[in-house]
Image (cartoon, rainbow, N blue to C red; front, top):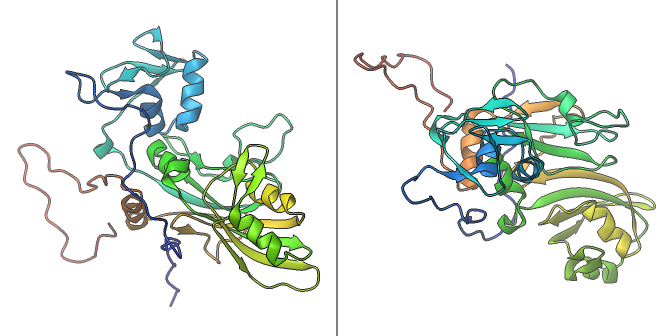
Length: 304
């Protein structure tokens, strides 16, 4: 009998106390137009890219609304004609969109970019093609780091997992060369001054090792560029290997080898949306007008 696949979703070992997220910026509806939302958010929700990317594209003049160049902060509705680089984008009501989530075990030597001038391998080359949407990466891992990456078709979900105000834990397995003294450990927990401000680790647990190489479990709450490596460099210890093993409630499954991917099923996606305090679309088919609803099969069970 085949073994049942174990869900990668699990609660963090010590979840951060989280209040209900506050929408980014002022997204309250304009008077008389209750479904109007900011353009960069609408494009991200449509799976075109992250909110930050969409703001940059709008500023570059790549987006038009009703035939006119869009402005950063502009509000739109599903009735507007929106085009990105000349191609029409159709906005759908949130309750009609199916959110997809994919996890991938990134390998060393891959970059998190859709295009690399140096011709290096990118993680997006490993992802399945999808129609009418686009995979948005939840954060990044640098060229020499491996481990868990999350991709989704929902810009809103990506934003809630990435934005610092939501305080989502990132856990890493870190192999260091040399001894991490008690004084160094306390420095990392108290905070270290980096070139882009003070950073610190939330948890630091020894995880074994032999000889000069020692493994540590490290949890941080931000996703700054090369943050873990820079933290250890700041206290005088070199990181020789770095693997991201968990992002929020999503853990890297032990059976998912380097270069492999796994899409979350509908039940797992719903659990992740609940964790992120996001609405869950009703996936049940609606009966056609004037016709009776289809009868539920007598056998089999829905996975939703």
